[in-house]
Length: 69
Image (cartoon, rainbow, N blue to C red; front, side):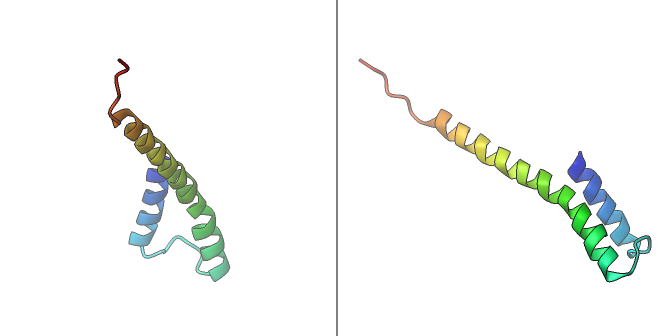
């Protein structure tokens, strides 16, 4: 949900031509992009980690099992 909200936030502002953001470089890049970008980075990294763990678990599950005689 957080990723969706932040992507929507950036997309609507980009579509409006950045009209609602402060044009000063420090504010735009530091606050608008930098701080809001963290809300894209952190959930994105967590999703990547979860995907790797799920793939690893699936590989372990898919390995052929040897029956003991």
